[in-house]
Amino acid sequence: MKKSIYIFKDGQLKRESNTLCLITEEGKRFLPIEDISEVHILGEMDLNKRLLEFLAEKEVILHFYNHYGYYTGTYYPRQHLNSGFMIVKQVEHYTDPVRRLELARSFVTGAYKNIRQVLVYYERREKQVGATIAHIDDLGSALESTSTIEQLMAVEGNIRDAYYGSFDTIIGDPDFPFVERSKRPPGNELNALISFGNSLMYTTTLSEIYRTHLDPRIGFLHASNFRRFSLQLDVAEIFKPIIVDRVIFTLLGKHMLKKTDFEKHLNGMALTQKGRTTFIKEFEQKMLTTLKHRDLGREVTYRRLVRMELYKLEKHLMGERKYEPFVARW
Image (cartoon, rainbow, N blue to C red; front, side, top):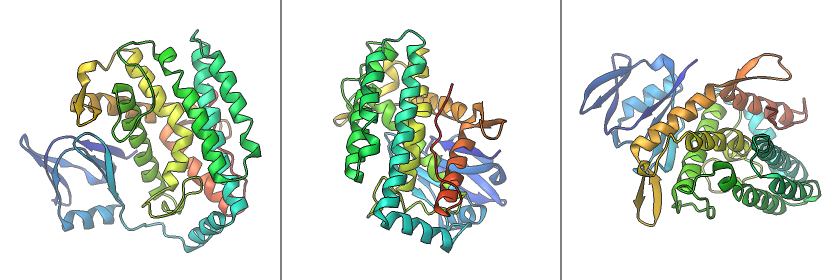
């Protein structure tokens, strides 16, 4: 399986000896291009056109983050699986209000059910989240009666607000209170973890979209307007609770992160480089964790599940099989 590479240090990334060469103050290091699926750049990095051409040829994506670990953009090479047919199908489903709403509702329903599954998991471990489960069930019952994308997003927002309200109960650490969801910038340590984890989930999903015939610019829940990509936001909604949030609960539950792994900047909070390294290590480990797939009857990784979700979406768009979102059953 090809790897995701994360570069934290400042330096230069270039093509040399027909592979990737990373030059930092520690010296020169070669990265075998054939083993790499994507590169995440979190340090200051010099690149050139020759490198970008090489990455396009090898079908390797570059994701960029700023000094504080916030996602800033992606170098998305020319798609090697171009499909005019699939683009037409995506546009047909986007421009048809009924078909778009059906897909958008599926993404929100998948997110809701996986949020519920996370809460049930912790309820079994004697966390007092029963009232939250009942509340989001009330909210979730309204999904089927929504008739617009705006209504769907409002229900989803209410479900997530209720869910986030249970984080203090699940984590049980007064050093990391939730308070309220805040972004751009995150207002405290826990919000910094949620934002960083969600960014990783978005970029991972975008990388998997690249390996399908789907066009990342055409989403269904999130509008395809002037935003560069939106489909990965839709699909990532399903996986954020069972991957990102579970990683956060593990990191804090096992005291793998401390207050010193965060730093204040401007009006917000961000992980330090050491904190980001710890988070990414746990995130990548989670993506490689396997679970038995009910339909296939064999073990698959979470990363593979994301790809399979995209294949299911392709089949729906082509009219072969109605899309049903993945719901965890631990």
